[in-house]
Image (cartoon, rainbow, N blue to C red; front, side, top):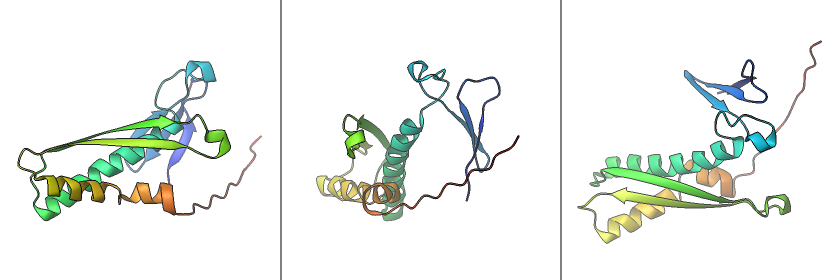
Length: 136
């Protein structure tokens, strides 16, 4: 799978993302030279964690027949030590399901920590290669 990006025509820095049939816009804040026309790359990274946790909990609950009606997630970022190599994300999930027992909620919390993006961010070595092509 690939993700294609290209600068949004007329924008200072905003990038158009094409992921399968989905189109998104990513930008940086005005203070960073952008127009704040969309979430920043850091925002998308953080959002991937929140979305993955919620989707994983919903998938698991449906598979196990657990009475989950909704899952909302919030991810808070502390990037104050990013330049020193520490990027902190705090994920908070609200699982709606009046019939859930405390044991089931605990089970779903464990499941949330096993979402694929959480694993990618915390226990997988990501190898990145970059090539550059010049067009005149």
